[in-house]
Amino acid sequence: MENNSAFDSFELQITNESKEYLRIAAKWSGFLAIVGFIFLGLGALGGFSMLALGSAMGSAMGGAMGGLSGSVFGIFYLLVVALAFIPTLYLYKFSSRTKQALLSNRTEDLTESMKNLKSYFRFMGIFTLIVIVLYILLIVIGIGAAASMGGRM
Image 1 (cartoon, helix red, strand yellow):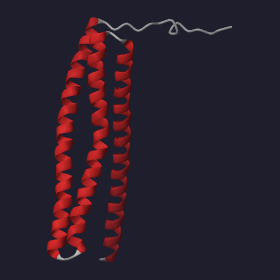
Image 2 (spheres, rainbow, N blue to C red; image 1 turned 120 degrees about the vertical axis):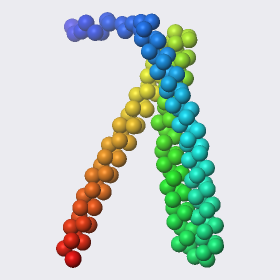
Image 3 (cartoon, helix red, strand yellow; image 1 turned 180 degrees about the vertical axis):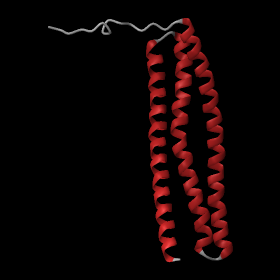
Image 4 (cartoon, rainbow, N blue to C red; image 1 turned 90 degrees about the vertical axis):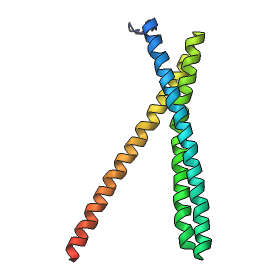
């Protein structure tokens, strides 16, 4: 015997008001994604500049330490840009697929846009948790370092 709930036969309806909210959200998320891509491009230029500057500093100073610091910062900066590209792409895909879904009235397009929105928030949530854990670790390390320095004085 099947056990069906009332929600199994429930079909979600999207009202005109909901469509308007989605249209506005799609416009703003598209704007934010485009601005994000512009800043990511500028960040990539900055990262490559740091790499070039680090190499130039290394040759000018005649040692590896001058170039190493600039190169390390440049590589780190480029990694941050690459990491930030992922949620920006999800946001852009949400925007474009939502606009497409609203124009075509295709459920598949709206489902795909919601998948991208879910991926965006999942990525940002995991990233936020990682940052919180890193902050806690840095605070604990800082307190430990301060305690050990205080004991030496």
